[in-house]
Image (cartoon, rainbow, N blue to C red):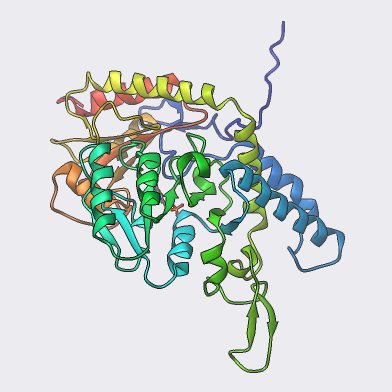
Length: 417
Ligand SMILES: Cc1ncc(COP(=O)(O)O)c(C=O)c1O
């Protein structure tokens, strides 16, 4: 009897990579760094591949290539909109990534808005805001809500809460709905940085209680350089265009100031857009929306439990968390290594065991400093400072890969390692 392998839209491309180890053996590569960049899935690759014969200018031509490209670009916008549950009056703007999406919103805030952030955010959601009110990251979800309430009471004027859906350091899911309800009770708006939430959980604007959501295609299995800001259109329609140029301008006169800017997404998407990125992202959004996300979630939670159980037997590594072990989390675990340099262990995991993880501060310096108790700072992503070691996973990750990581960590952190 022959086995027929069914190709599905969410198959991970490259899950059969192998690496040669110094001892002469060859092992399957275990990619456990999804939180940085997830691998491409078939839906994204197929969507890009299928469009190539038709590829042309978006919103700019009458030929069949241009017409098809325009249709596909706008279809991708609809698919992403469906994925995040856009409502009447919402817009979907294609950006480069989450960083770009949050910078776009930050530049579009009306005068007088105070942005409130917790200091445990990824830098993409910490740095774009002008003079934000930064709250210390609290020890419990309830304390987060209480701290927000206090901040909102002390403010005299409109506010925006910028909050992560899931931490890129600890994987913990933040109490977004409770925070959003609190924010809305004081008339504030809420933007959710869903870069790490969207690959693991449904991100519905209404369910989250969010006014805006930002995400990255390359973390959502569509690594073609597109991201998204979706949510309420009013501030965005009233703001200066994020990018000035063709496509964003409806009419340009001879005087420098004589420009009529477009409304809607076009206002902030000047220049030729990233068609393949948008289409690939739309395709993954559609595939995920049609998938059994409950089953994907259960599989991931099983892997998490397996990893945490295994790590409990490795005394030299300590999983870190903000809210404690019981907080729901996505497939991201960061480890403190009190007696070793995480960068060295991460490098040896790659070279000697064929396992890809990440070490460092993960562009969340205030949080990682607090979690490691370290007072040192350093370059983002350089691995030049002792920080944490992070394993993260998603579609395509297997129990065997988790077991290999645990075993390799046990060996590398033991005296003989
Ligand atoms: C929680 C979170 N927000 C924002 C970002 C920034 O994403 P990007 O680099 O795709 O802009 C990241 C990236 O790791 C992240 O983990």
